[in-house]
Every structure is written in structure tokens, then in C-alpha cells.
Amino acid sequence: MRGFKVWLWRSVIGKQGTGAIVTHVERKSSYLMTGKLADKKALPLTNITIKLFK
Image 1 (spheres, rainbow, N blue to C red):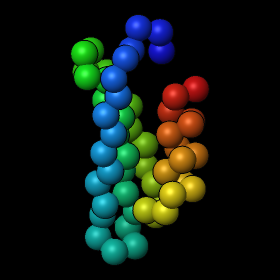
Image 2: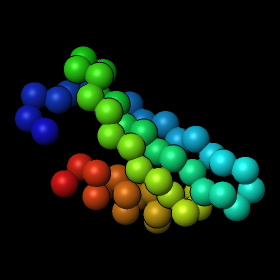
Image 3: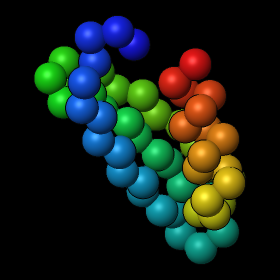
């Protein structure tokens, strides 16, 4: 990810019990990474973020 500087992230929560989507966008290049979450807890969010950035 060399050259990428500022990342923004957002999550979109589905209806109750349907999970969530997390997005990471690099501001300058608009490079987008997305991941699906089973729930909106911190540990799954952390795990998918680490997976996306590897």
C-alpha cells in the first residue's frame, strides 16, 4: 500500500441480524476496499480490516 496516505472508513448496518458492510477508501486515489461483517461488533470489524489491508 505504498503511496497511499489518508484512509477513510465507514460501515453500513443492515436490518437487525443481517450483518454489515465496511468500506475503506483512500482519499487521493479513491481506491476502495470492502468487506462483509456478520455483526457490528468490534472484533469482526478488526479482523476484516486486517484481512483487507494484507
